[in-house]
Length: 201
Image 1 (cartoon, rainbow, N blue to C red):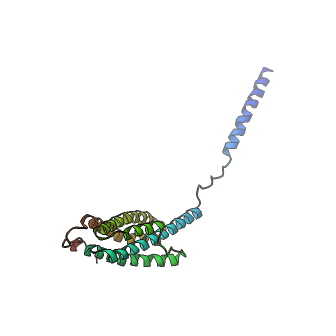
Image 2: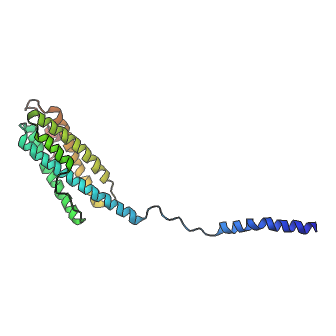
Image 3: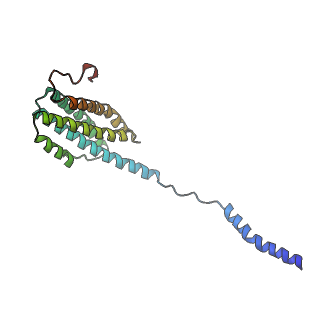
């Protein structure tokens, strides 16, 4: 009798353990992905569209302020830099426009509120005060643009990465020239701001 009780007790205790082991051996469905490939692609495209619009605004602002500098400055160094800005940013803007057409992205065709405010400020200045404010604005604008283009250069979209990589050397050159200009405006005109060894063809 005692043996039968022990056997029954053993079966009673082993039942839940066997059921638990059977549950554990059943195949579990894989967890759903946190982000699907389609969502990643869509996010990349959205990010690139936003970058293209910012780049267009930046390029338009640089062209506009460069034209203002050509008009207002009496310093040949400032005028030469402004002409270079116009030439380089026109080429970049053309490349960006072609990309936008290919990707069906509508680019802004007006100055941003920030760029318009910067222009109004510069319009009120003249002489050395204008030259110094213009150089300072170019330094800040190109520092911001370089950070933006560096981030886009890591894009998984090959066309956007290529565009950013092609444009970054020009932006860095502009920043270096703007920093040099900022340090020399107001000095004697005979100072050569851009030594021949640093000029780009």
